[in-house]
Image 1 (tube, helix red, strand yellow):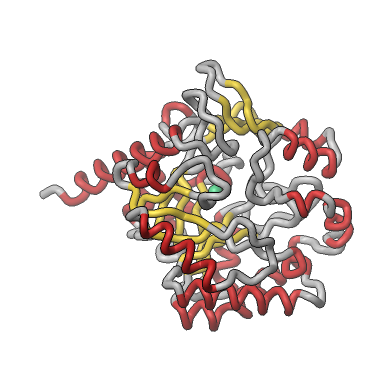
Image 2 (cartoon, protein in one colour):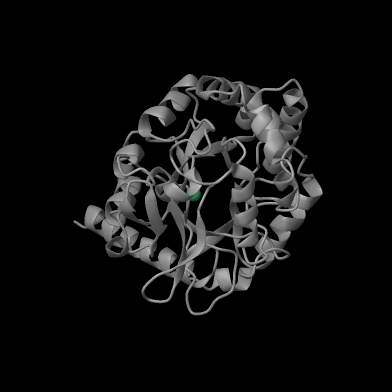
Length: 357
Ligand SMILES: [Mn+2]
């Protein structure tokens, strides 16, 4: 397993490559061309420029998060062919640059959803939190506005301003897209990109839906072990894999996180390891990575990754905001650095236990 940190690029991120390089054990970054809207081609020269910048800091690009999928592809509208062709060109350009792990999601309209981006905890840290009652009491447009207003001025992944104006339009476009149709549109997309992925040995790693149930009556298809296995079986090829995200699957306490990992040997291409603290069904806040701070057993999660031979990039996920840091919600340096060191510590102990004679 290769430890990484997500990095949005020097124009957008408060965290520098130099800081990331100084976290012990971190070998690379997970990054993206953050200014390119979903659906547009990622030019090869921009990819190479980003790669050179990362390598000049003695790090590697170990994955992309994310090459976003345009809504036309998810909806299955006639113009999807154009966006699929653009996506293929982006994959070719990444492949030519030797970047071969690509995270994406297939969530309609909203990416991850949280109802509070800075919930104060008893130690004075702040975290992202979710309360289903808030989502149930608000319309999507207001929700979108409130989320943007509370982001501290940071552009957040999946909440790009150009989407803001289009929320109602998007809801209208998705009105006939049920779970089955969304699934079929995902498989159509994957079949279309399969030859390119196989030519360049690109591993596609779908990110689970967050939270792992429908919000605002939009369908969700990557929410449980059964549902991700259905996607894996529909195209049973190594390029078609998963981003195992503990925090997203773990929004539903019924999901057995190590069990999901163990059900998918060889098909997990990327891992997000983090913790949540559940209060009641549908009400949770994000926690420090440490098992004792939240509801997940991080030891069992890292052990399942180790025992299934996972060798891809892993990253800590949303951290708490601590030590008065000002950064994009969830993406400060300090708590994610602590998380990375903790996950590496668990991994070292598990590996030594398993290999010591
Ligand atoms: Mn994640």
